[in-house]
Length: 220
Ligand SMILES: Nc1ncnc2c1ncn2[C@@H]1O[C@H](COP(=O)(O)OP(=O)(O)OP(=O)(O)O)[C@@H](O)[C@H]1O
Ligand SMILES: [Mg+2]
Image (cartoon, rainbow, N blue to C red; front, side):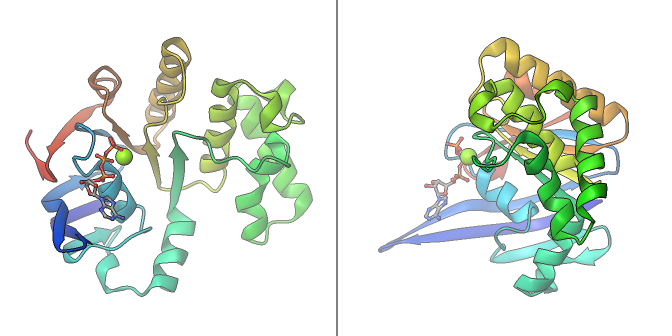
């Protein structure tokens, strides 16, 4: 599904240049569950932003499902991203004035799905993720783990080919974090392709495959 070849990304900081991603080549296959682990500042989020088409590399090539992403303009990348990638973040990023169900409906409404169909699909997904009786709650009325489940439902609702998760357990206590990771494992067993970014080796070890990065390079 994903093929990265010699990706490089630099940031100019005044006189200095930081090479955040320094020649990364890797592949992610259909049905894979890959974790990318490395210390703070090693380039994980920069790499995730490139894979997620939120940012572009300075050098190298990126193939997503047969499309050369580096050859697309911003609008084309936005379309490809919207159709294919679901995001999960450390801080959930739910819209505070919308209920859990409404949050999950948003990506479908963007795509022109009717409100009735969107509500039905969102409700079913929240049910499946154990939030059936919380769907009318606002994010502030949910625990951290429940908010992350709602965020996962929102990431999944458009049937993305890829789920990209950046420190999805970072804001959760250990037990809740473990339940989120086991949910991700279940989703992967059901066929969902997942790339999980973390600095926590214990979390990373739950994936099928671990890629370690340091200073923008793959070290193992
Ligand atoms: N927008 C930016 N401008 C300048 N430098 C940046 C920018 N984004 C990242 N960097 C630098 O690139 C390097 C990699 O940062 P990145 O955020 O990818 O690390 P990370 O592995 O995600 O770290 P953490 O575990 O702390 O989230 C760091 O040295 C960082 O300071
Ligand atoms: Mg980061």
